[in-house]
Every structure is written in structure tokens, then in C-alpha cells.
Length: 200
Image (tube, rainbow, N blue to C red; front, side, top):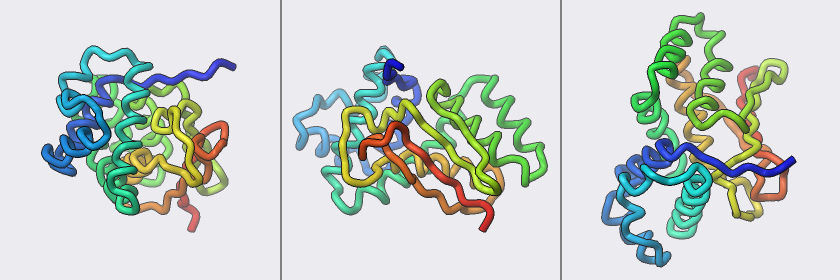
């Protein structure tokens, strides 16, 4: 099966806005300069006309330079960016996404988690993402994983996705969840897998 690397450009634009707000415009400019990247990458409008393939490449590259810049602090920064990104994406979504979100919020709390993760998958482009039930727990599988595009690492690196999962579930049920990226394409796995522990 042919690998696909695509990412919705509007999601990338919202990621860049959230990133700039989290670390500050000046720091963002410094990160780009240090890595020899164009200063226009800090402008959200730059991302409006990108192809989905180019958006995937840039999403991965931006996270890579942030990991290099922050070192051990990168995980926390990227988790916070992912958490903040959830509500921005929801606010910027289509009428259909917002209608689906409204339906989820009317479900009994115990039935909201899986549909919320499926909503997140739809927002992120959907085709390569699926949600599975593991006894009492849930598993989100990302086969395209743009954050891992052209990256290799000894340990999983999809911290923004972890932050998105954490915040979307908190939005759904008002509870924190223990979430683990148990497989990552950067380490040689065929897909990125995020286990959401619910059963205790």
C-alpha cells in the first residue's frame, strides 16, 4: 500500500497561530532563524495556499525544530500547544463538525469518549486515523501521522497529538485521562498508536 502524507492546511495554520501564542512571536522568530528557516513561516497566512502534502511536511518540520530548540522541555511545550489547539480547531471548524460536536455533548457522559475521538480524527483529515475499543480502554491509530513525516527517533514524539487527545476528552467528559503513545512511526513502527486508559 502506498504511503500517504497529507495534512489539512487550515489545521496547520491554526497550529502555527497556537504555537506563536504559546511561545511568543519573538521566540518563534528566533527558532526559525536558528534553524535557517524562512521568517514568513511565522505568518499564518503563508499556510493558506499549501497543498496537503506540503502541509504535512511543514507540520513535521516545525515540530522537529521545536524539539531541537527546547530539548528536554519540548514535550511539555508541545503538549500545551496540542491542548490549546483543540478548542481553536473546534471554533474554526465547519458547520458539520460543529453539529457533530453538539450531538456528542448531548450523549450520556460515559458514551462520549469514542465519538469525540472520531470527531478529532475527522478534524485532522480522517482518512488515516481510526478509533478502536480495547476492553474498557480506547486506542487511536494514526497510519499517516504527519508529525512523524521524515523523522526518526528513539522514542515516540507525537506530543501535539497527545495534547489534542487529552484536551478533546476533557472537553467531552470533564476528566483527565492517562494517555500513552505506545507506538510511533519515528521509531520504526508502521503506525502511531495512542492508548487511552479508561478502565483504571
